[in-house]
Image (cartoon, rainbow, N blue to C red; front, side, top):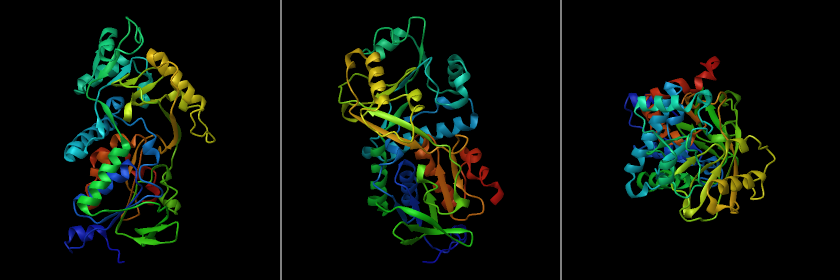
Length: 396
């Protein structure tokens, strides 16, 4: 199959259609494949295993921009991610059922998820958010009892308060991925291949021209987009394409069905908890993740699973004694320095990479950003500070 310069095709109107190969069937790969396919690009998505079985399945999946107010660039990017999720769910109509927005309550002493904010008082954060026009309000004990009546008495003390984000929520990642790939395939002709591990990106003349699979098959393409997440470096086969990573481990646990014990997303000092499908609750805690090691296996007998269940019982008296029904552990694909890495690599044509912590939060926007960059040569300004070139300047 012939490979040509992508921008020549677009700019000089030769009439050729872009053939795009997307690696990875998680939230980012699904969003990129959908956005490229919907504008007529022939798309092939290849996934090493099953769709939605990787890190996307092991995430709290909170969708919010409220933790990024210490950095204007990151806040704008995160806000674009929230808006893109809202717009995408509306765009898909009856199939856009993955985005849940019950509101989030963050205890004043809860650990921040946003880096530098960890050393700043909560009242400064609230004031900053309100100045930015972000929906956020202080609530006291009486408000909390009204919003979540099943919590223990004194869940926050009479002298304390929390922040309520009434429009924030989360996505159900498997439903999100399934809806996008179904639409990409059925509406726009995209091809989805599972059980197809990639072992190398094919390079010719400084450009990506396809991939080699683990079986030795060569699949040629005019555009290669690496959305393989924690496996982003395992699939490239070339040191010059590897993104420096600083991965961490994360564990989540699920309760059995417990009816309507909790309606909102709660971020307390020692537990994050939100509703999940079928009446279950999803649980995680930052401090318990810090004790995980590479040898840990996802089991309901894991000490972290016991601790999460105990903490839930301490927060919701009616759930005391409930044990975890399922546990998952994943490696989070975090670029070195903790910031996103989305865009093209200098010196390598027709190749893009998207790897980031909090990928669920920005996945819908990444699909739009890479579509416009790949097809029209317009890099998203929200990613100006987070492009791969910071790791690959020597190759530019």
